[in-house]
Length: 342
Image (tube, rainbow, N blue to C red; front, side, top):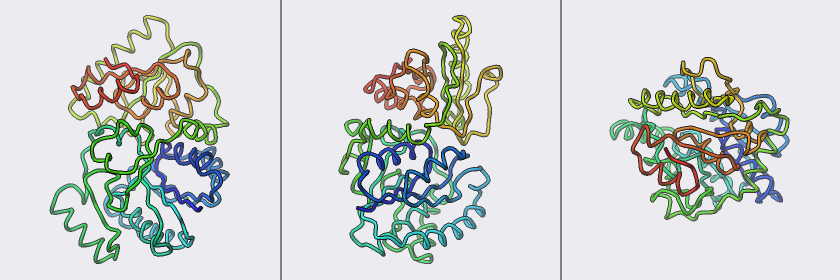
């Protein structure tokens, strides 16, 4: 079997690489990575040794790449590289960002070589389980712009049957199968898909393969604050800061070390953490946690994907979601997987 993984984030890479080394270890595995984060040489080296072929493409990092005209120019270059790369007969294409135009071209080029290619959705963090609150923008923002986008890309740029823009990730009509961590807890829109559970050993293998050179940055007992993109908090941002400040005060009063981890694409800062130890943004939180023990750290956040992975890795994990937002969908999911909700 021949598989093509089309990934964007470090979380995607952990899952995809883990599957390539476990479930699909006997297959030929290729990777296309859209660099949506500041990728380190360590991660690049790990990926080139994990897949038989790798194509690194410009992604959403840095933020200027997401400006409309920059994105259009980038698509032209990306499309040419995709044509050159996708000449193999793939049995399975596993992708995440099916709402993105380059992914639709990947489907088209793969389907043109092999009409029997299976297109599979790979979960993207917490998306399968609750809405992350990020409002869609750009040409998918409303009905009129969606219609314009459809005309441009489906007919003028000849995506034809491979163009499909749903209102949620994983909603492309060609995606009938999904790999998720918790199939029993997915949102309603995913329940009609064939759901395959990502084994824990695949998750662990992905972390081990990518971050095997990482050194432990933690000393004694401490608290790690893991943050979402700050814009996700919207008008609740001040409430978030107050809740984090209370936890920060508790840590100081009890002599605990404090660490914090921003989202890899974050461009803002929170002043409350100015005297604490920041973990490098180009390394995933999962990579750092693989260096520590469950007895050493308590992980605190709001609704970052890092919370569910920290829990999976055996750490005491706390979400402050109830203090800043009455979103029952988030807290219900967290309670089901054992995350403490305050």
